[in-house]
Amino acid sequence: MVLQVEDLRVGFSVQGKELLAVRGVSFDVKEGETVGIVGESGCGKSAAVQAMLKLTPANRISGKVLFEGEDLLKKSNAELRAVRGRKIGMVFQDPMTSLNPTMKIGNQIREGLLYHRIASRKESKEKALELLKVVGVTEPELRLEQYPHQLSGGMRQRVLIAIALACNPKLVIADEPTTALDVTVQAQILDLLKKMQSHFQTSLLLITHDLSVVASVCDRVLVMYAGKIVEQGTVEEVLLDPKHPYTQMLLRSLPHLDRPRSEPLLAIEGSPPNLLILPKGCPFRPRCPFASDICKEEPPAGNSTANWAACWKVV
Image (cartoon, rainbow, N blue to C red):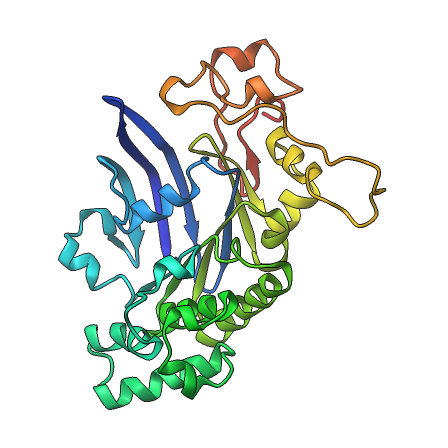
């Protein structure tokens, strides 16, 4: 097992109160596996993965994050710097804000190699050029000497993937890596992630709000809502036979080629709950067409099976 997350809780101070953005999340990532975390904006996906590496300004992070058997939450910032980039690579959502606008592309790829003392200065230049070729950047020799603003959005995202893979990490976390890209480039980046995972033999944790992305890339999927995992299982189990009403409604809101153009998309009515004043019972109850009296009293729990949904309807 590469990663084991147990009862992760992440709290932020808001208006003098604690907002618990992640509420007892547990999951694991096996070696060579791709796991997707999906859900609407604000459901806690990014907060969870950023908290694992202490990349968030949260005032409380608790639980266990076991990476290769060691709890990352117990490590100091200095100890974590030896893990970030070296053993766990990160691909952020917006490459324009993730890349340093004042540094040439080649130097940004070399930075991790030099910091972790994986390569000499001469070797790092050769490695940076090799990585740009591997991730499919055109005219790699030229790009090494260019700045981020001189590259297209798709090329910048490829550079971020090259940086994440530079030190040959055991795990890569990709946080909404295709959101800012058009559909054609998005497909290219997803295909690249799959190829890179196979080439570098790494595990991948993919954060997205797009179930079609999950279907094309992932082995297993975790569905999050209001800071908790409400359903999990293999991609085939969850997408072909969803158990939780939230997952079912997410799937129904996707556009389909066989749907008549005159037929509107099915939107999920309402909004995710305010985490400062969570309703009693199931947090999805106000938006759920199947809610019953028991849903008002207490939230349902998951179970120990590989494919489960936290819903009284399927308990």
